[in-house]
Image (spheres, one colour):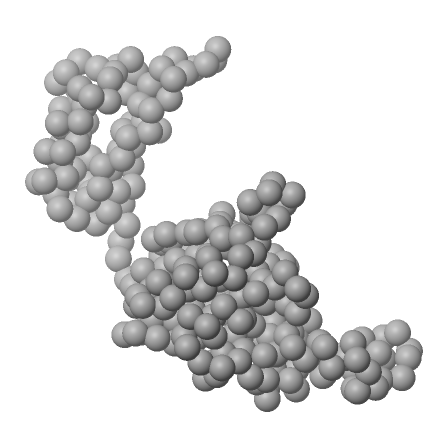
Length: 266
């Protein structure tokens, strides 16, 4: 099954904040023998978010979406998810309970009376308005939940806040609760070598030959123009199925050595 990541927020596209979700999600998946297949960054634009979700809902992918589920004017993700699914948005009863519990805790911490009917408290309940049929995703940081939509043949979208302190434990909980059967299913192989003063165009036929002979392996090429401390080189390697990967890398090394190229093992 493919895992995807959607990061929502103008602040990422404008550079006001640097995205931290991508490397963390890669780390969380890798620790469980999984990998990320794709990632997208989308600004706070309702039409674009809706179009993106409509496209990804049509897949069987497992998608994590971070950002835009608050209740301020620039938070559109909840409404866009409902629009993409063609369903109404409604207050989820369990989300309502969790939000009220959090509001009560905040009032007790501040030693002030708690009035559920105060305008600001009624407004906070909007954070529990999700597309009809959604399930909640627990938030261990402050109890304000995210939500989940299941679709396709095992596909699902999980919507979390943009705050890493909330989103990351929520994603870990999702993986450990719903997908442990996918953990470490395949032994993954990845190995590479530095090839100095070589041209990618000259190595491309070899790369194509290896991928053709070993269909469960991908060959990757990461060229570097070099700098004051490093000569121009290409990091050339293979990744994929453990058995085929080892055989493919042995062949790659043999071919490179036969061409008398200068190599450095990574």
